[in-house]
Image 1 (cartoon, rainbow, N blue to C red):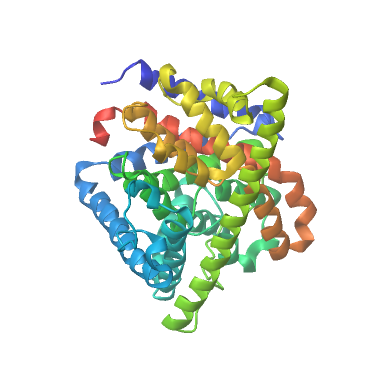
Image 2 (image 1 turned 90 degrees about the vertical axis):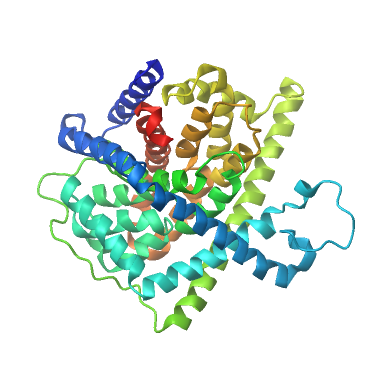
Length: 422
């Protein structure tokens, strides 16, 4: 049964599309067919992935996440001993077991393991063929060129910098619209290595957390495509038309894949750690200044919670939860989605509704934050230095579109009958 909350989400969908149209470089070139196709693809993916016939797959995803977390804790405990927690015997009596949770020891090591595993699955061509399948889907349903379709598909499983590496041979051939699309989708989705970490943080309070995180990253890809095409439309006669699915990303052997995957994962871990430390510290510094001016309890997040409360409401969140939801959206924008997921996972059951918690999982599940702007510019400048100025001119628009893409995914989910998620 549909309700006013479903209509509320549909209103949010219209507002998001209209906001991007307002920034369009060619307002007369609105992609009507793509808009309908993207929304239909998102809705179908949600219906298929949450169909009772698919529940076994989603439960298997959750079981796989649990298994990876347990296996990773064994390796972490081997290196760090009791400091890593995770059920390892403590040399002292523990009054609060929950205090043993340490982000650096119990979340970040997962990224190393998943990065190595992803490289191995790519070497074995398992992940490669899954990526190619999604690439063909986006090419056939949304008219993307082969290289762009492959980059979009790779973004679902790889990072926003790793996916351009997959199509490195074609980067100089991308049009301005295709380059912008690649940037937006990179900011609208998350890497497979971080999906597991997010699911681990949400599992205590969100049923089927791993399934929701996986679906969130998949359906945000078509949302990113649509919003990117609205803001920077493709000019007639430009853009690739044929599939180009040969990738230069190769490993010499399974051992080479594991070693290089671990090395790449280490860089991701170091980047995440550094960005979290710096941005959390900078926001804390600004909050100290803001608190000194406006009084105790007033912070950047406090202001953003008011700004983003109506935005959260438009996705289908009940107004009673809108301030809390707006606060988390502000945390995502300023302190990364990692911090926002940590805060969402810490919100006690019952403090917000199950619907709000589920919609926030979709709204937060993307790399669109201020820190990622720097990562995007740095990474793409290395891969395509001749287009650095073009990247700099597009990156803030890409952040806007990427941020709205995850809100669009939340709106699509919010517009669905709640019974399909049972």
